[in-house]
Image 1 (cartoon, rainbow, N blue to C red):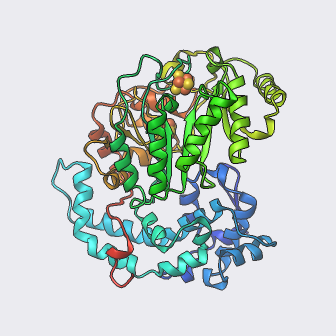
Image 2 (cartoon, helix red, strand yellow; image 1 turned 180 degrees about the horizontal axis):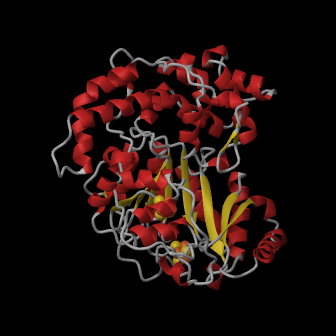
Image 3 (cartoon, rainbow, N blue to C red; image 1 turned 90 degrees about the vertical axis):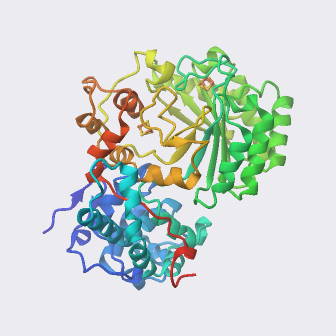
Length: 504
Ligand code: SF4
Ligand code: SF4
């Protein structure tokens, strides 16, 4: 009997799925889920979003039968789990990743073989090596053209996600990390100066903000790069309401699926003021799509400056206007008892009649930025990969970073400059960055095997403080990329329907 394989989060792989693989097919219809595909994809999926009780029976079934044995993903779900209704979005997108392993594995072999047989000149940079793969562009396109992308999109019911065969194909160009969003951290100017602020924002930081036209130019490129989500944060973006409204208008003109805005809620001083601001945003198109949301940051350190009443006013006004909840991120203070703090927040919301008008989540404070001085935050070993590299973050000085955790103090892993790079080039550079791939696929603390400096034996307050320690002062990024190059996957091309022979 085959022993079930247990992943590190406890998901069980039943014996059927660990059966020997069939010969590699070039036809999505013949796809059967393999253990290697599953391990690869789950290793970088943010599993909080995945419903294992739904997903695992479906992949078990897909290991025993070919995809074409089911009418579509709804039929697969009905046969695997019973009941009606479509699977979760996360189930569909993770299944898509599994199918994409078929062409991706063949592409990776093509690229590796080429680099082995035609090694780039000694001393070539990582970017130059990847550019040399242009020599196999036609072969790569023929591999991809052999698959029936329309059939896959129909079978996966990508229409339920507002996607198409075209977006499915685009995803093959960006498999290293799902680049779901662009975040404009467009100013470090904030009306307050919280003790824990991870990017050091405050009233002093008025000098820089990203130029509005530059932001609009990025938004215009987002559909072409397959990026559906715009996130606006700071600092405090509501200090610049005209820009905020202009960004929402630009996002809607680009038909983005989701726009989110972060705020500390200072502007909801009264119901009247809150409603006036929300009316402006609503008229610009904010909250017109189901993925839109307002994210309010509050916590004990915010309340040293802002009364929590403003959050309650905002929650009530927002609900009245849009019929939806604000998302409230409550940052827990170092050293205080979590349960007592959670109770206190719920009681205040209940007293204001807003408890059902808030999606509440609590989170610990990482020791980065000004938060690094909060020395009583608990430490732990960071033995998991980073699963949140999924945005491109653009800073007030025009620096482009691969996540919001790399803040303005962490100069180690920039991926570009707003003034110089087009969005597609930024996505491609991020996809092909061997350092980021390493962080996303390995226990994060393993990065200390490749950089100068010792891991903190006591651990870290969170993954981002580990990154800050290991990579914040990185001077020679190219040398580190080179050391990690052999573990890398390559994403040198954008595959779109109009670049494909025979698929229009
Ligand atoms: S944590 Fe948020 S509200 Fe506080 S200073 Fe930083 S940006 Fe401003
Ligand atoms: S700073 Fe590091 S741990 Fe934090 S989100 Fe970015 S890559 Fe992940």
